[in-house]
Image (cartoon, rainbow, N blue to C red; front, side, top):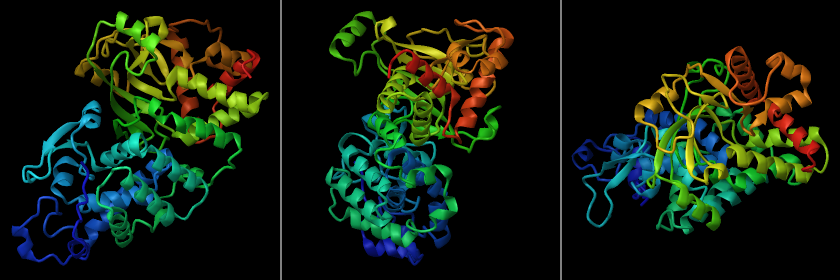
Length: 478
């Protein structure tokens, strides 16, 4: 499964300080770093390159940033093991079910001895992607309790080394690594490699929002807790292999930090995870048994930002704040699972289709009638072809029509008009409800949704979310 690549402490220290003899090049251990590596400069480059990824992971899951970084340092020999070099796999993650379901390919470690079963390892697009993938696995299943506890300690301002050590011990006991010395070994490598230093140089607003813990009884904290409880429900991004996009590639999104847009390949199978009655209905209605894989570009502001939008919306809507938080979370979860598709094909299970997973084309947070290049017919049960995936996720496209509902909560244009008529009138004068909106009105509405989402990525307020809260309040939901 997973292994500690720096098993021998002396060997690890020797590599860290660059004193491996030349003769070692003739005896490259199967799990060891390549002889002559890492040098001091290579260690520094490895660590500094991955610091922003570690911050991103801490913000999203609560996993200690120094912990996930130290594990990558330890298990990949600072990026110089065979598996790290050939598979961009910094954790020795085997090619099992989780890797297959995420659409990863495999690579074989030919030198692996018979005593270690399973020579196939997951191949990642980049080493950073291996951190994101493993972090997603450590936030669920056997390790979920450990990671939930780590986030709680983060929000309680427990010292970094303490919560890192506590988390490493907890995941080791849960089965991540059979070696009881694993937490100490990782802490030692992380400390010597600088994992607990220099974080201020890469601090981000998202990091600051995470470490500045809101009160446990605050609307923000309660909204965040609701989102954290079901992060696995965000099926297009949770546990998937996602590639961070350069924002400059995407017209209208250029102002966002790189990585806010992510290209994810995900897999769904109709009828899985449904309650008994719904599952029976689904099994009766589906025509495709096997799993379906599609690509999607997601706008990912992070759970903290989603929580801020919910809390702000409930504050503006008034009424029973706790009921509002629950209603808003539930509504967004039911509509979009708190995912914002910017481009690509989204498979959704809806009761109107017998709970069968059907695919819909998206652009800028809106369901759309795709252009001819994409060629996707909404409501199709079959998976898109590779050429469709590529065409439907390209940066520039003009849909033939767009929906009146905007993610992340399927906010209606009418709801925006009811709350702020002046805004709605300036967006789509004389708009009509219904799908699709076409022509100039479609372009205006799509631009407004896109621009609002982009601006909200650096704000606690999202008018699309607030308009939905106002509507729910008027409907007597809270």
